Length: 140
Image: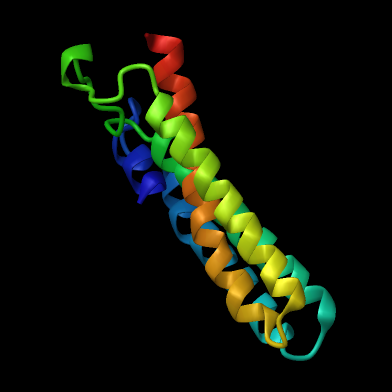
């Protein structure tokens, strides 16, 4: 979606490079996800690579959405409930600790893949909240 937004809102009209990337990047991300998920049942390396891959894909997606035109809303300081970003930073730390705790449990579990896959969500949200909190601190 971010690449389509970039392609459509280009100053030169439709940006074909971004339009092509709108199809290629999700296809590559999906292929990497599927390959690693299926390989995890047969090889040990994929069990360790899978959460890292999901975290990387989540961060790439967050970065692309943030870079797309029109996604950065203009909000006055009076409308922000966490003007200095402290709540976002604290919540970020808690989510990152929780995600790392799940990854630790995954190393001890008989079926680590399921727990490691669940651990990715708080890790990605934690990093995203940290970026939001740091951005708010820099604007305050």
